[in-house]
Length: 286
Image (cartoon, rainbow, N blue to C red; front, side, top):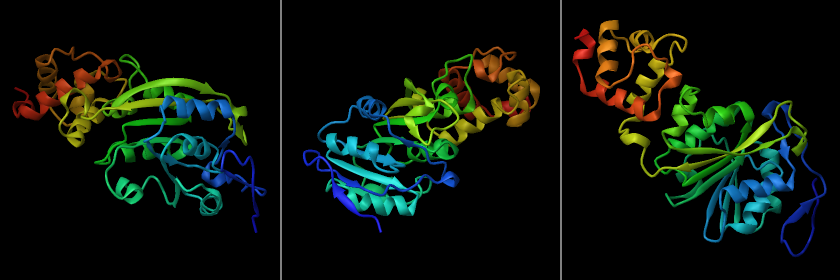
């Protein structure tokens, strides 16, 4: 049995003598560096009146920082043992939910759609499904600040010339920026890779006037279906359309058919999508 004792009485945060051990199967690397924990809260501009949703609280190090600053914290933890331990020691403004953040909804966590911010040390294997789940929810966060693998962070923040399907997918919903890198020694146990904190200012409406994410990404996925090929060929393969149709489509929106998908900006993808959506003649190559 885990026994709980109080630490510094001024912080109101109970301490556990027996800390749950990391589970390799769940990709657990607990963030312990206080500077990084505070940097995450600072990047999210957490303050009085805020509601925070935290994904992957683990032993509660970030939860503690958030709880001191925000009015309300809802922490979602997949590991049942960690959820029980954290629930037993959490202060009154923290609610711990045992569940999979990839399958939960804002309504499950908050009961209703209220303004909130998202934060968390996301497990590498599930980082993008988790982020996608919250961004695609009808009640999106106002801001998301997450800790992910450095290579993923660079991809999220990529500019035209280095874009990927993931870059477009995230930047449709908000403006990302890399806050800082995080060395393996900031975790227990240390991962084998460098991590990074990414802040995403989430838009109230989708970027560039996109009205239908599903069909928008049908076009984007087609463009990236063969990333080494020219757009006229990858789009013809992915949509599918005759090559003459994709050339006419691209030229109509002022995009050189010889360009590659990673060079397009979000505005260009949006123009391409709208032209494809509104034009039936592309199917016939006219």
